[in-house]
Length: 228
Figure 1 (cartoon, rainbow, N blue to C red):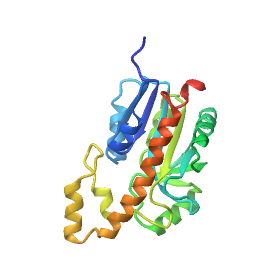
Figure 2: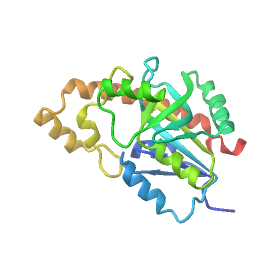
Figure 3: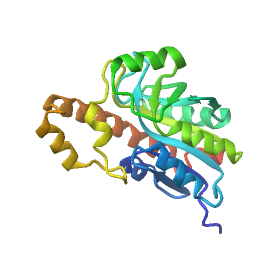
Figure 4: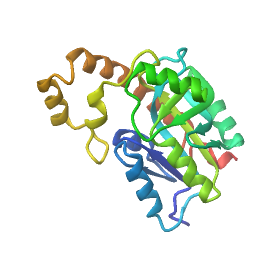
């Protein structure tokens, strides 16, 4: 029996990768760095899988979406647009709708630098029509396209459209994607972070990760790929 994973999951954070991991799944993440993620993916001698999924949390661009809402991507918009596999997307949507959580299908925007203001979120929404934004989906979609593999994306809204990530958050990660507690404490000590920012971020991320774990449990061993 082959030991190769059937699904390659591309995430940004260590916690996302841990949630995604399971039988038939390889999870790869780069600590929120698209540049490092590209190097990790390019270093793979061969895809060694039958499909690629972008999986994790995202910033909300659609004002109707709340923390914990799930977006199953129809495509990824960056310097180009990559369409998600229609059959896989339909399977994911059908499975996730059984969770009782709000699930929508829409494009996601992929960016190389964190979007840290509400105004910039609004601009990106107008330019792309995307429902959410993250820093890995465009890298994963481009990788899948290069290797002729089906692609899907499942992202859960963390910070909604009317709130942006605190500026310190982009630097408060270790290279493996775990939170850098010392960086957070330094941000508090220097005034770059406020306690209320941390409280709001903790509330939003708790809702997002709870929904992400529920989605993963619902999707099963190969995240619906075996049903295509």
